[in-house]
Image (cartoon, rainbow, N blue to C red; front, side, top):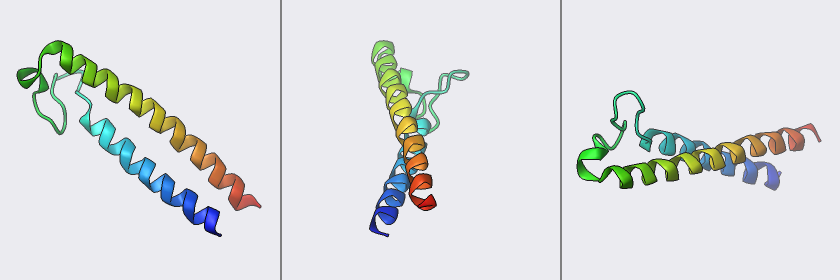
Length: 79
């Protein structure tokens, strides 16, 4: 029972994290981020690209962790 609650709590944290990371990424069509507004006006273009690359990398990491956790939770529930 403790493992089930632990993994579901971690899954909740991963869910919130992926939502936040995706919202912070810049929009590719309008060059404006959803949350941050016009990042190119305050940051240099190279710094904005590095931030976008950082957020993109963390989106992938969190998404992989999310799917692994879902599979683990499903395996625990079947036992």
